[in-house]
Length: 355
Ligand code: COI
Image (cartoon, rainbow, N blue to C red):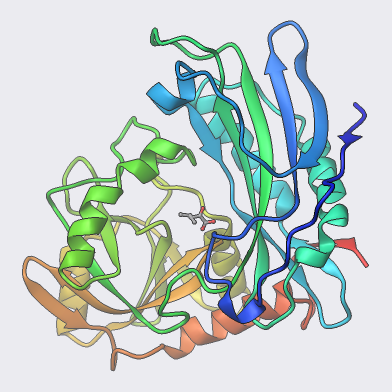
């Protein structure tokens, strides 16, 4: 398929790298493509960034049939633009799409489309340390219909946003609030899909956590309310004794690409990584007997986010001295060095898209 390109007549001013924050600025162009059963995916095009006109009955607005991805483009010291494991994001997008009854995308074609878009927008990739161009591929259901079924038509789009740190804390430890009153996902649900509803389901408890002075919620399993699943919008890791432990993928946990990268890096350093169920009680016991050394989250947006405090059942514990642990710091540095092309790429995670 040929990608049509229509350039914006007027280009926007670029924000200062120092004031980027997360997710508020968008570039001049976006990628769009449509699906209907007759033509399949068709009309791939790069156009000026702008609003969609949607009929008020458009299905995504009512039933949340929407999936998305998050990945980043990084600028190296020599000015190259590179991506981190982009094939894995498009693979996961198709997996999410399968769970949400959406038509499959040609992964190679959408990656090629992203690279075409990035080559047009490369001046938007910020250069200050810790900044990047966040990429948000999304699919929404577009039938104008308010009966409940899966849509017959879809829009796929990619938007780009220059970003700095995800949390206002930056790399400083975050405070986590554990709840047994609310869950993010349940066994047999869509927790493993990157779908809008999972994020909507997280909002109410997150507001309660924020009101209590905590940054994010630690989600427990939706069946027994005992086992840790995720934290905020990230996967979670614990260092207990000499082991790095993370909840096993149980179909209600998102299979994070940063999670997988942490596991592979840690194993390559000779660390024992264990993917298993881990209860909140075990974490508190490990804290009591001094075995809990570090806790950190992992995700595309935040990369590695150390956890300084956890509150569960009214009792707050401090992890280590409440500061950034050495293992989280080492992982963060190594991941960033690979992403920004400052170190070797032993796992072939990097794809250079533009010089
Ligand atoms: C990401 O880490 O890329 C995500 O998709 C999380 C989102 C809430 C920013």
